[in-house]
Length: 123
Image (cartoon, rainbow, N blue to C red):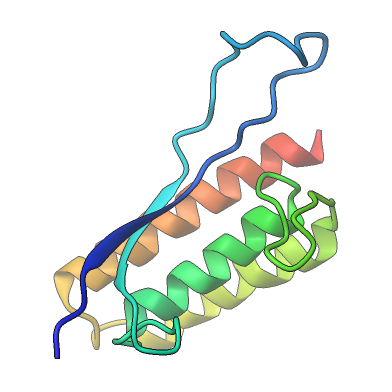
């Protein structure tokens, strides 16, 4: 049973300091995850890509770059963000040689992006 594919995109809509109300402020590109929804609102397919997107999205939420889905509010907890990034790094090490080229590239890209954003948030 195939579900309708939808785009899920996490975008940083906060503006830089001093330009909070400027609508022309640059927005982040975010991560895009395609997922079909099952009967109960859960993704139809849970796979490695879904797992690593989950950790990367968690890192963004803990960096304050995306709102918490439960509270719809942004908060910053760099220790938890760092933990999610470290989990991605562990997954990269432990799955080396066992991923498809697409999965390996996705993991590498998510690791790079979350690490760069972590450094920016840590300043």
